[in-house]
Image 1: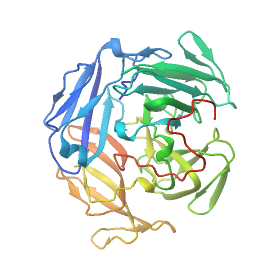
Image 2: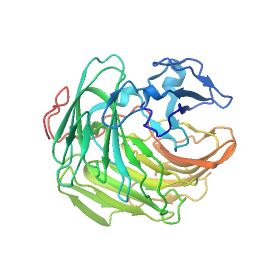
Image 3: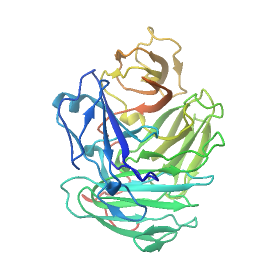
Image 4: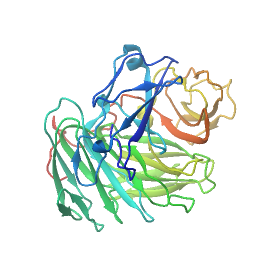
Length: 404
């Protein structure tokens, strides 16, 4: 994980919460940079990151935080790890097993503000070579060490164990940027001091990017139902000449891997998106506490294949296959010709709710105990992302670090 840069000169408060199938405590857990973990009674672990570990744009620092869950039961039943940095909205973190060495990113800073991306190595990999290829069609100015890079240029980076790098792009957009590395890395991206929907300047928001080999071609999107203006989505392709259909009606061809689609989800929408080649979708919204939030939407290829429990105080939609029995649940909605059904889920109590479904994901909002003004939103999906995309070209054992 990467603690994000802050204007605060003091410690950054980092907390995380493990979402499992069962309501079980975290009994065996360690953090690599010597931070002491103090669990509270609700199973949320908190520690401080000192200023020496803060990320500074354009500089490599020892900022990566490595969390190791040693409990075998939790490892097998993990649904999500949720990270909160200071008072920002939580972000879902993927395990190292799900990482890769080739990424394309989505960021958002369309009105004011800056876009950013952050890279982090994983433990015990040794030196890692990373090439970041900037998009060619928009004016870019990105600093790395004492040099500046512009559109179409390649930034060559070397990172060691537990090192991280923050790259910032003021008045320009990283969306479509290609990242290739010699070993597995974690990639985060987002925006800061930009306007999302309400017209207010939002704080930092970020999402962890998924490696291209886990992308899919079939997605169900659900509007958060928080903002009357609805949510936004951005779609990036893995390959050129990708055809994207929204609810079987609107068809768009993306001619370049640097191009993207931006669209809107109206309030209450449940939308089916398909593509002929793998794509990644991020959903951008403003939460109930008026914070910006970006979510990485899981493709149906990453839906659960076993029964699972939701966490307490989550309300939302379970997206299930059409052959599931929904007679005990209210308001099932068939989603186009996708073969999936959305049915409402209400888990207001602090008891986990067993959905007893397979082939499922859930889009939900959660009220936090003791802080009713905070309502975080997420998609649950497979914790260990699988290879889901069809191969269109021969993939080497290790990512080719030359330009795409």
